[in-house]
Length: 508
Image 1 (spheres, rainbow, N blue to C red):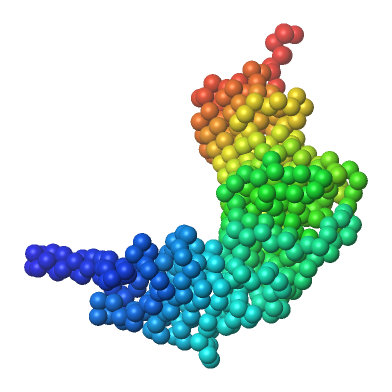
Image 2 (tube, rainbow, N blue to C red):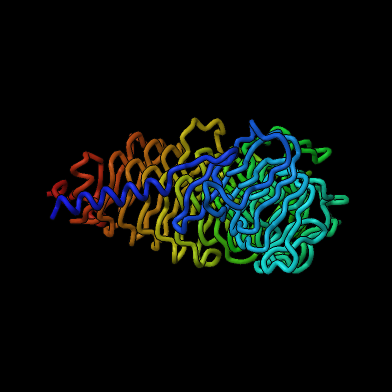
């Protein structure tokens, strides 16, 4: 019986492998689907000699789909592409980079994946008459059901997107420079009509590897990599002309709920403040509750204009992803609080400003943070400070610039590994009752840290937590607590809270 079951399993695996096996018919590479139709997964561009008429059948099976990246290429001669009526779906990045004179969207096609026509020099889309899902307006391709802009032909001038459209889809303006501002001054900004008030979402890579100047009046969701660039552009900023090789110039107050992972990574971002001030430039990332994803502002440069600093207010922030603010710049001050009252070098996350913040992610504020002097984390919902969240792992060249004081509120239960490692100027550290875990190397190399109290609530302390701190470091612990046992076992100098040295024998 076992042998029979084993043979059946082998047969089933053979069937699965056969179904996924790539086949070739002429210039087309395809895979057989479960319903016995085929999906085109590749194309032999090297042997193509003209316009492409995709057949209705390959290997005596109906063609039902164009797979992800199936026709992706570079530098081909412009071709017209005709799809058969049986095509039901077109995969992500299916025609990426293809020079297309025109392409038809059959009546049966109901799915077009993100970036299907990314970086394509499409001259014309032809949508079947009476199509229930897709339509063109002035030759730009839209999804009528989701009200999403899918593709914008490269030969079409960048002009107004119709009001009613709610999303700019994935890769739509990838690699393109979108200049929509007539003129920019400190107090007066005029923009061409481009982003409609109905727009709420910017898709993945929508403006990546390019530049954008315009307003995002009612946009609430900026998806992953929306304005990402692989290049580091911070050296290309010209203060006099506002010229940058690549930049994102947003000329409106933001009302976001999500800033996706890598959304502005490596970009030059200019956010116009609601009010210009002579010495400092204030700007709130969003005036509504919102999340910031991983690497969202990693290596991002925030140029200031005739000001000392660009101060970003993070009021209303609810979640900070890992490496979100890993930035190596000197002219930015991140101020999580009221931007007009909080000391500019303070990261202050308290109940009044962050009612919903639960997590500060790994390396959230980067590995180089000379601009932060005081860290106050005292928010009711904040439970965890992530790995290396405030780590400063390089020699501080600023004699009086760096983290000097850290206050951890009672809501925080976990300080992860290396959370404040290398903060060489840290002198004052306050840990509150409620803290349970201090990760390995959490305060390692904090060379000026000479005094700390470990609450009775702490039940675990990792390795090398206070290594290479001040030679005068004394740890205050509660009698009979885990902290007392840990300090005694690890050989740290400690004292028990409330106990004084017995000097009565001196007078006996």
